[in-house]
Amino acid sequence: MRISAAQRTENENRIRAAMDRLLRGEIPSGGKCDIKTLASESAVDRTAFYGTRPYTHLRVEFERRLNAMREADEIPDPREAQITRLKAEITKLKERLTQSEQTVDELTDFRSQALSRLAAQHEEIVHLRESVICANHVTRLPPPRTVTIGSCS
Image (cartoon, rainbow, N blue to C red; front, side, top):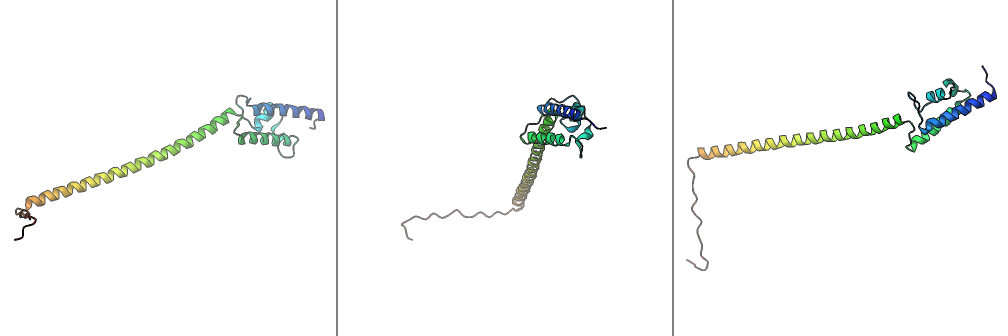
């Protein structure tokens, strides 16, 4: 079914008005800042925005404006902004978790090394004590001779 030029102009005006509302962040409940919501808000069939249909240029304009807003970090859809924020937070938390796990691993290794060294030192002390006990004969060295300066004998 063909539409008249007046109907097409009226539809384009409704689409542009809906586009402006969506890009300002006036998202209806249950909707998003996307073509599907644009079509339902402007009461135009969604297929009219694709291929060689009459409102393809408006879809391209909407997507261009939406991408420009995203690049400028102005996200009109509050849910999308929240999703973006939460994804960034999740990334930070994953990095912190990885760092914490690495620290725990390093401290566990340090603890194991310290315990091994303590055990080796203990074994050496026990061995030295046993060797002193087993050796009944300890030879004492004579005390050092004192030499007086200036006397020749």
